[in-house]
Structures are given as C-alpha cells and as structure tokens.
Image (cartoon, rainbow, N blue to C red):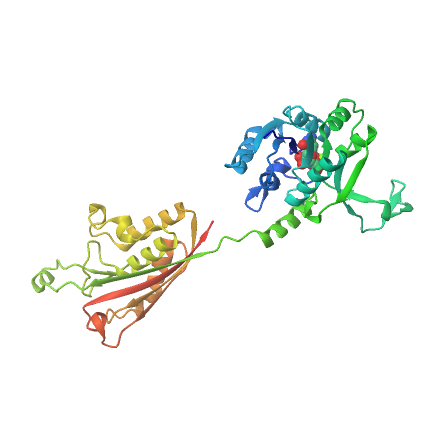
Length: 398
Ligand code: CTP
Ligand code: MG
C-alpha cells in the first residue's frame, strides 16, 4: 500500500522565550524531551504516514537519536532533516524531503507536545474529504483589544470572529508546495501562506491540549497535565528472612582466646556466643540484603553471592550490604528505607540499637530502623539455639 500522508514536525527553533540553553524541542518534559513527546501521537496513528522531523542544526545528532528512540520498532518511515533560521525555512526543508506518493501534508509544531492523536486524524480526514486545507482552532475566550502599539487600547475586536489556531495544519500537497515556492514575506503559520496564494482554509475544532509550549509557564502547565496522566513509577517493596545457629562453644578455643566473635547488625559483640555461617552469620545484615535484592528484583543473597565464594569467607555484613547497595543502584533504584527485626533470646539488643541503626544507615545511605523481640522461650530462638531476622525494604525507581 502506498503511503499518501506525510507529517512534517518542525522542531528546529531555539526556544528563546522558553529561555533554556538547549533548543526547546530537546528540553525535558517529564522524563522525556519535548520532541519525543510530540511524536507520540504520530506513532499512534492507525494509518501509515511518512514522518519528516526538522531538527536544529547544532544538535542534529542528539535530535536524530531522540527520534530513533521514540520510533522504537514503529514501522513509520522517518526522515530527519536540518531546519533553517525561521519556521518557514524549516517547513520548506521538510517539504523537500517528501516522498513521491504523498498527497496530503500535515505540518505540526513539536512545541505542541501534548496534541492528541484525534486531532491529527481529524485534520487528515478533513483534507482528504474536502480537498481543502484544514486547520484546528479554538474560540477566543478573552476580550481582545486592538492597541496603538504603545499600551493604549483603541478598539475592541469582535471575538466571535476570532479563532486561536493550532497545529497540525493539513494541506493538499500541491497547494502547500506551490504556496511555498511562490512565498514572499514571512508568515507565522502555513495556512496564512496557503490563504495568501488564494486557497480556502477550513477551521475545525481544536483541542486545548494542543497548546504551544512557549514560555516557562507553558512548560509547567504541560508538566502538570502529564503528571496527572502518566503513570507514576511506583516504589517496590522487598522482604528478607535469615536465621543462623549459635556455634557450639568450644571451651578450649575460648580459653585460648581463639573463639569466633559474634557479629550482629553490623556490630561486633565481643562477650557473646558467635553465630555459624560461611560468613560471620550476621542474620540482620543478611535479611536486609535479601529484602533489598528482592525489592530490586535481583534474586536473593544465596544466588547473588554464592556460599562457596572465598571472597565472602568470614566476611562481615558491611561487605554484603555495600555490594547489595551497588547492585540495587545499578538496577536503577534508590533506597527509600529499610526496617529489620531481630528475633533472639540473646544478645540483649536494646542498649546497642541506636549504634546498630547508625552503622547500617551509614552503609545503605538510607534510614534503617532495627527492632528486637524474643519469642517467650518458644522455638529455636526461644531456646537460644540461634537467631532470626526479618527485614522489609522500600526502593524507588529513579
Ligand atoms: N521552528 C523551527 N525552525 C525555526 C523556528 C521555529 O522548526 N527556525 C519550530 C519550533 O521548533 C516550534 C515551532 O516551529 O516547534 C513553533 O515555533 P515557536 O514556538 O516560536 O518556537 P521557537 O521559535 O523555537 O521559540 P521562540 O520563538 O521562543 O524562540
Ligand atoms: Mg519562534
């Protein structure tokens, strides 16, 4: 099937009124550049079109990359060309890139980044059915005054005669090309050029969402509108549980001063019985690692660190925690907080709770709260055969 409709998106302006050092189309609008957002409705069109994007010369490589990234696997044919110093020159550059089968051309401002796809469809429909130029417009609600140019109102304009026009503006290709080749003077929109060449232009009802991002205030408005529609990336929770047995106390080793030291919640506990484990057996630190790894969808401590890895032989909790933080960060998350509970008959934890929280929070770079409980003599923790810890973690996509 031959493609008969083209959409030229002009994105080559500098955006002087927006006031960024980057050209306006490359400025971010909720996680993506304005240019990328402005292409969404075109890739959402049901029919195949030729897309021509007119980009600023100075940042053409970056702009082209944005177009390619936004296109993804869409089958739309994309051409990227460099624009000129006026909007009219930029449109002319876009026109030169049209392929032979094109009969209807839409010209659209990238700066109208939130234009709904229905507005593109309505314009294509109108041009195809009438054979005339069609542009979207909205009634003007403010009272408009004509001034003397020096701040004095000289007349009230009848606003029922006015329409605030938007884009995309659609034209039979031949009309638009002829108007451009014979253009004299600078026009602020394409319809003015076509009308000056003697053709009728039909106005169809526009959409307030197609407003042009011109000033910082417009950008803020666009951000607020998007925030209401774009699904916010939700935080993710994670859960981790670990248990370790106390080592059988070897009286001879203890007497010789060679007994293993208990490490728990990132702290050494010199006068307490140590825990078994390939590492130091710090169940609190390990439960935190599991909670963070599960929140990040990264598996668990066993699959990530491997009990046979000699690097972790006798390693303390900080080694596992630091590596876990690195993995979670690398996977695109920021740690919100961690909450962990130690379930143990001993050691008596409360005197060192604040110390443990400070050490663990320091390692994670996020608040860690540690609580402790006993099980009233029940189970392996009650019989002081070992300890257990349960942790939850909250991480945010960045
Ligand atoms: N445009 C263009 N080439 C130009 C000037 C403008 O392609 N030389 C495009 C802009 O990128 C924008 C659309 O025309 O998508 C409407 O123009 P406007 O909102 O005026 O954008 P800028 O000219 O970039 O902004 P300013 O006038 O504030 O500098
Ligand atoms: Mg401009």
